[in-house]
Image (cartoon, rainbow, N blue to C red):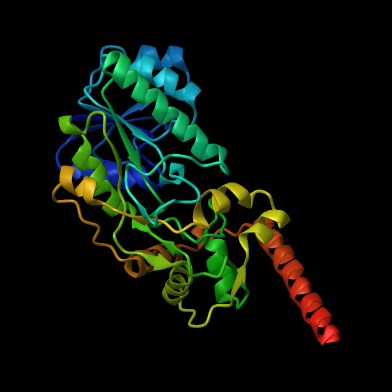
Length: 342
């Protein structure tokens, strides 16, 4: 099977590329890289958002499946529909599970859970893209499939609710130095972490699946943990037996730094428990086998193997310390006020 990955070298997509190659598929990566970053893949070097150059380089090619990890807005999607119309038997759009209703009307998320997120532009753009693809399916039989990952991690990402995304070792550094780390809410809301090697099994299983045309899927683990458990297991993997976890209400965090609003109110402050019945029905051998404690141990080992990878986000550190100081000040003021009144 001929598969084109648009992107193909990110946290999620690298594992998908590697598995597709391991299963014997002919894989081409389309991105801006000047070299072939994954052994066994072919490479088309282009900025996919340059419609003229993309048309020139992709002209004459056809694929059994195109998997697009790099569409984030309806404008970008419109270019992709024009570019791949008639060139692929299946177009798989990577959406996001953050598009699901916030707050949920039912704790268990299925693919029929409404899409509505008033808190995060990222999610609303993904929803708009899904709506455009549904219209393309109805109006011109555009062969789309929608996939919604939730929080998916691999060797290079430490997936805590409050952390630096590109320099995610920052939270581990704090834990190892005995500094407090922030847990949103009371740490008891439920969350689902999925290892990228598990996600890849579902995604590659959908490639070329004619029955998946017009369908949407989330692909997640069945393991459900509280945020406290996630932080504790992360700390244990880092050799920290008693991390200093500070629980701070999400609205307090967002008041201190509005940048938290999308990722917390729009996603991680809500429980996320997924019913994976549908992906298992379409890909019968799909099963997530990597427990979070095992996956995060592998991630910590990756960082520990190379000091050059252990980048620290000093701006994030400063923000967290200011929030922790404000929270501590509020606690002491409240304690003083109520002692005085009693």
